[in-house]
Image (cartoon, rainbow over all chains, first blue to last red; front, top):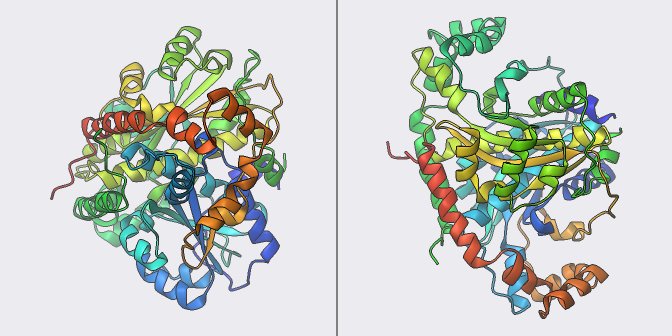
Length: 252
Length: 252
């Protein structure tokens, strides 16, 4: 499928058929991931493929019991991974200096670019995908579950399978909301109102506000979906993961 | 261009023609970025477009004077950005709880998925791209340069322009090096040797070892390209950026 068409038609799929994904298609998706840009061609990421039914059931629990994790045939967990690279260095009498926060960022960037290649490749084959943000929330549990060694941290997850729904395109802010020319242009209160007007007036937004009995869409985000309390809890947990997986030795 | 073809034929371009990019093509690239998956549809990222010649010259300095930053017509800096979202929340009597590390990760993920969409869209139009890892190294300087407010952190940069070179595909490790089934499979010393064998025997590798007068490729990474000293220096710098931009208030 044409690249721009694949990109433009993306919608997250949350309802899947149980149909298996052909081995050769899965392989092309993984190959596509491996062609993404990677810092210094170090390829400091790994992809863990989950297909086993029992494993998917357990994995589902770490992703807030979103049923698509069990429904879809393939779950791909993308990890920042300096373990393999460090092993190689040690076997070559080269002392790796990748036990620090910059290296974590480098590896996370690698993992995410690979993930987006995999997502688009899957969609070009008529498959649906959904990213799971819960990956960073429960990275500690995922590390135990997958038996990840030091240097490996799950960053994001892709649910992949044949769509059993055909949702509308999701709304986006007008392009001028996210694009800045030459310098970052701060937003006046009037501009913020303008940029969010369309989103705030969507029928879906009205429905959500009524269901949640709140004043507006912003309050749904701050009080229901992404609360300060949860964010701070998972922040500490994820920072502990970074430390425990050996990426916080920043002093010379 | 076909999605799999666009993905498979990617190579980083480091030599550009000075030809401008048509406004409508640039717009399609930015639109493509905005269609990427984003956490809860919050779109917590921004893209800063640099086209001004004088600005590009200055920007080049922050990217270790890589000449392509001046050569190529367009530089796109992708930033994690909760500033706009927080402004919106505050104007709606909703107290944002996004001043923490998890929110930084969420925003960085958004920025990177958008960047990879932009990269592939650009390549599908016959443009070349190169990611600049130097973005996290000098995020502090880029924040000053672009006048980014609190909540905004540059994560990666795309150089975009018409290629003035036609490099070979870059080697990649065999797929089994980066893919794990069900559990993370640790690597024995023999497996590491096998997985890196092809890369270590490339003519390019031989040339690099000779030029650098080192024992092997791993030592080129640890002693020349990505040294412990540099990594630790830039780790501290980037962690300061995260703190200064308001993403380290993790205590409840």
